[in-house]
Length: 80
View (cartoon, one colour):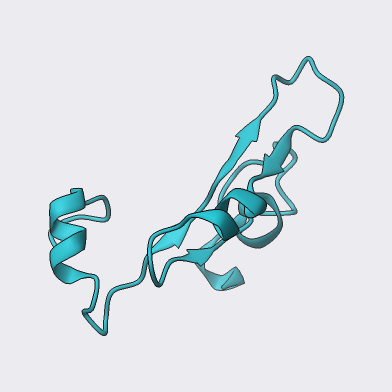
């Protein structure tokens, strides 16, 4: 794979590759001036329509660092 982000044409050609992993991280973030929560996942949209074989990841609950006070930083590799 040339990069982590690829074109739709590349993805279509390689979707059946056994070593390819596709993740779907849908959601929206509210401004910090709004009351929490500030992030909402769009899991329901994923269920309706997603790339075949794509796994849904809830950004806040599955990959961010709960120890980081900013609540938006990706967790360090050892957490996974």
